Image 1: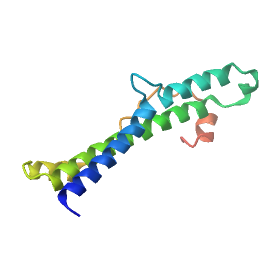
Image 2: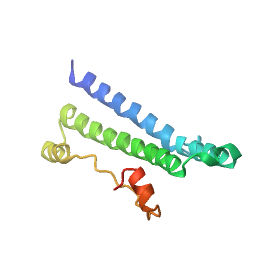
Image 3: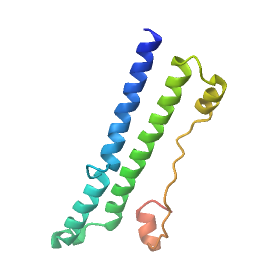
Length: 127
């Protein structure tokens, strides 16, 4: 496999990941999966049959979408640096090595005040 083929394949991999991220986060032309999820959750919430469903389950679903999106975006950044490092000649390889070596998936997670009582915290395996 040539450097050109490797570069093209890594770029295609990054583009594929970004397409998935765009589908989750949306863009100016299409709704995000998160927005669609919120709309559906609101519709479900208005349905009287849904009153037995625990609200935290819905909150967890939205959070999972956000986490997936962030992971895919960070993976596309790592793929970009990997592609630059191993397929381009005129780049700062030391800086890219540092970026690749120091890369981590630590994600910012929004913290909300937890208003559940002790029994709910135990049930949700928080404590």
